[in-house]
Length: 107
Image (cartoon, rainbow, N blue to C red; front, top):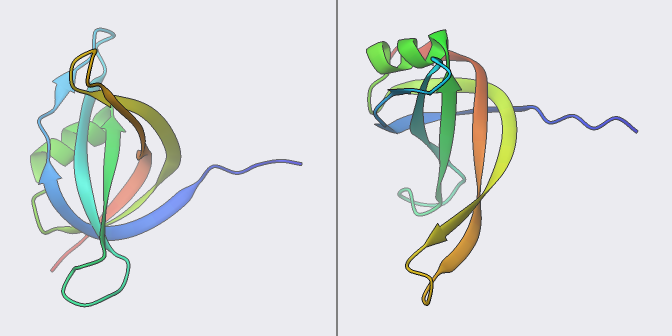
């Protein structure tokens, strides 16, 4: 059986994080996407980190701003996270979207 790891999601940009150039020379950036999962007054807002690379990262850093409505296509990637020192370390997982393409919808 073939499995497909592809997701389409839309929402409003919450925060565009600073871009960087990786050691390989590839530009990278990320932003948080707020997705309304139902409920009153944003009580059920789902925050998703979207990671972008290459030319798309450059475009995100130049043109994307908080509040912009975007549609994202990409794949899901799970990452392990850790906070705190060795004694009080809290471990968990987060799911990011690795963006392949997107559309910014004008207001």
